[in-house]
Image 1 (cartoon, rainbow, N blue to C red):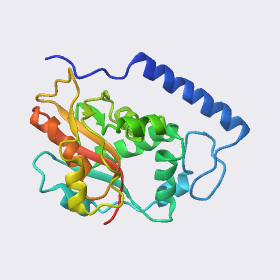
Image 2: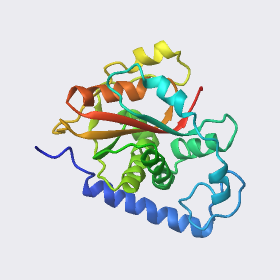
Image 3: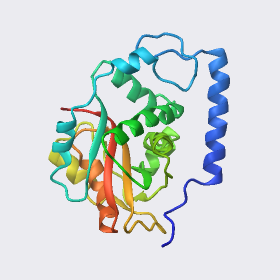
Length: 238
């Protein structure tokens, strides 16, 4: 069996190292503050202090399961926190996704990975939901890829880019559940050279709302013979 697509290129790792150095230097001049209580944090890549981290609302496991139970491409589904409009979870997710702070993804991903492990998820490889090319260029990074790095570290398994986007899609934020499914239908394909037959894959995204994106991304992996579980940092809309 050939191995799945590269576990991250040297250029990617060097870029991540450079970003980490920049974040570290920035932290010396502008100390990182907890996104919950604004206490000073000892590590600039952390998002939250230990107290705020423990106090975040956990996602309803049954609600997560119900969202994806109908889809044969998805096995287990896990979400860590309940999205809280105006609250700390929202600030964390927005800092990671829109705030130019990809370094937050790895420690947050480790927490998500531990939650997945505690929920009984057992996988061989972790993969992020790919970001559309224009969004990736505009943002400069894929927040789901940053989370996937941390999840893989927590589970002690490799991370790989197993999927590609086949076409651009509209933002899902303002769409209904049915429109979301239509928007992402067929938007993902197996990456060239990825062999996932018989593999246990954990697919990572930052937010789970209706399950449309994760289900659409899981489909080509399942069709290629993988067993696909999914995990997200936050559950929204439930």
